Length: 159
View 1 (cartoon, one colour):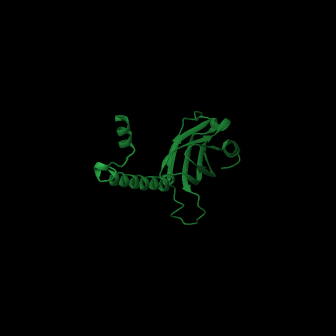
View 2 (cartoon, rainbow, N blue to C red; view 1 turned 180 degrees about the horizontal axis):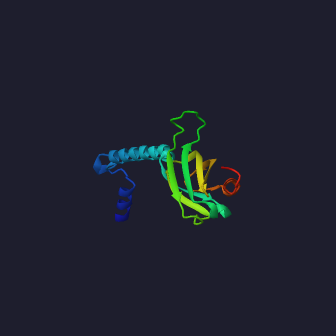
View 3 (cartoon, rainbow, N blue to C red; view 1 turned 90 degrees about the horizontal axis):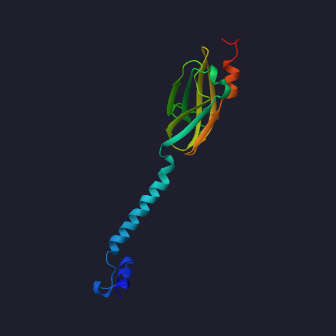
């Protein structure tokens, strides 16, 4: 009999000594409504909330000629609005000559979505700007610029 009373309390069974009402029923309903509202807010706002995104820039064999990499992230929503085209984040990474890693990794705190990334790759006194469109979805994203870097920075005929 005691086990039945405990189970009855846990599931909110109606008891005649409470006037036929479940004890704490109004409070339980309020908590359920608040929990549902909180879940809806998290579900709707969650994707727009900034989070750490792992970005990997693949330099490959061209890493030996790279002295620095600068990345600028802007929303890629297709608008021509100069305010919207302003970079949301920017990072500059410098390396001693010949010491850049083959894969440059960093964490950018950005919401999920589509972005336009401009990479300024420096090496041998030259700067080459490479643009890419990427999608960030909370995981790891790689941007392979190894061919572009080799083709643009290794040329001796450009000023």
